[in-house]
Image 1 (spheres, chains in turn green, orange):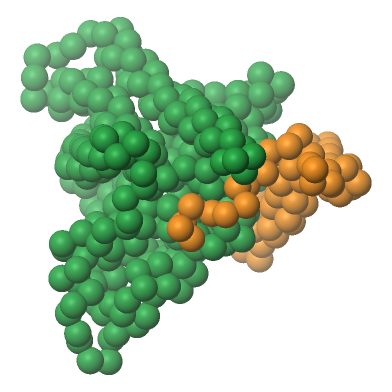
Image 2 (tube, one colour; image 1 turned 180 degrees about the vertical axis):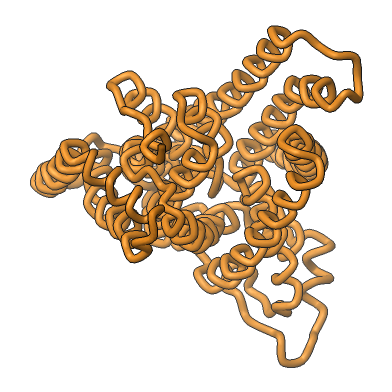
Length: 354
Length: 83
C-alpha cells in the first residue's frame, strides 16, 4: 500500500519538474522565495500524493536556499543574524500554521481547508502584494523622472518607529538595517512568515515585505536574507516530513537539478538591478498569484453548498485556469528577471567602457 | 580582457553531479524502500534524504555556479547593495 506514495518517474515527468524547478529557482534567487506555489500542484498533477508533494517540495527548498544564500552572501547582501533569528521563529510559525490547518480540516473537511487557504491567499496577496507593487511602480517612476538616478534607500516611517523603540535586554544590531531593533518585533514577523509558509507554501510573501517595510531593510538585502529563513525553515520541515517517510528524494533532487541552475541566474541578476526591480518582480508575481485564487473559490463554495451546485466539469475547467495562472505568474517573474539581467549587464558593460 | 573561465572546475563538478544523479536514479527502488522502512518505524532512516540533499547541493551547486561562469554569466563587480 505504501508503495503507491512514490510514483514511477518517467522522462516526461522528470523534464517537467526540471523546467518548473529551473524557473522557480530563478525567481527564488531573485526575490528570496517563489516557485513553491507551482511545484506542489505540478507534482500533484503528475500523480504524486499531496503530502509527498509538499514534503518533496520542502526537501528541494532547503538545499536550494542554502546555495542561493551562499551565493548572495558573496555579494554582501545577506544578513545572516536576522535570517537565522527570523528562521527559528518561522519554524515555530510553521507548527502553528500546520496546527491551524489541521483544526480547520477537522471541523470543515478538505474543502473547508482549501477555502481557508484561499482566504489567506487573497487577504495576504491583495493587501501586501498590491502595496509592494504600488511602491515598486512609484520608485520606477521616480527613477525615470530622475533620468535613471537611483534614489538613496529610504527607511519607511513604520520601520523608523520600530527602530526607535528601545526595549532593554532585547535590542540587537542588524547589519541589513544598520540599526538596533528589539527582537520582540522580529518574533511575530518570523511566526507570520512560517504560518504563511505552512498555509500557502511561500513564507517570503510576508517575510520579505516585513523586513523591508516593518524593519527597514533594503529590498536586495531582504530578499537575500529570506533565503536564510527558507533554509532554516526548510531544513526543519524536511526533517519532520522525512521522519514520516513521505519525502520522495528522487523527485526533490530532480527539481533541485533545475532549480540550482535557476538560482544562480536569479542571484547574479540581483547584482545588476536596483531595489525597485526586485520589488516589481515580487509585487507582480504576488498580484498574478492572487488572481489564480478567483478560479478555485467558486468550486469550493459550490462543494460546501454555499452557492448553487456547479458541474464537476466546470469546476475542473476553473481549476485548470487557476493552475495556468500560477504558471503564468512564474513565467512573468522569470521573463522579467531575464530582461532585467540582460539590460543590467548591457548597462554595466557600457559604464565600464566609459 | 575577459576573466579566465573555470572550465576544469565545471567539468570536474559536472561529472561529480552526473555520477550522483546516475546513482540516485539507478538505485531508485532502494531509496523508495528506505522511505517505506521509515514509515514502518526505522526512524533513523530520515537522515537519508537530508544527507542526500546536502551532498547534491554541494556538488550540483558548485557545478551550476561554474557552468554559468564558463558561459560568461558573472555578477556585476560592484553589487548595487553597496552603493
